[in-house]
Length: 130
Image (cartoon, rainbow, N blue to C red):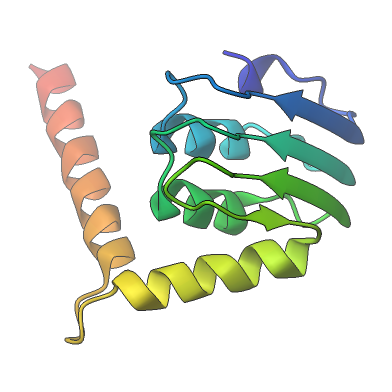
């Protein structure tokens, strides 16, 4: 609900989730998806949020609003265990993590995710038609 309640015109945001064990990759993705498009400066602290993995980092990097120019994020004590001082640092780390966790075949986890989401959407539509 936090991400959905952010003002649309917000340009600066700083959030500290230090030690929050309830924050997961899904929560990071949900937050990233709700960030205002005009956001220019973002600081996020996820230190010791032990349920965050490279999947959360990848989602944040992929969904970060294009307007963000000033980014600082800390992920010490998570499965990522790193800190980032720019959007470029975040995106490079996400690419490295993605590349190191990807199987050597042509399997694309993002395509699989898209297919699963499409299938779930179709199932929900069929159920609503009943």
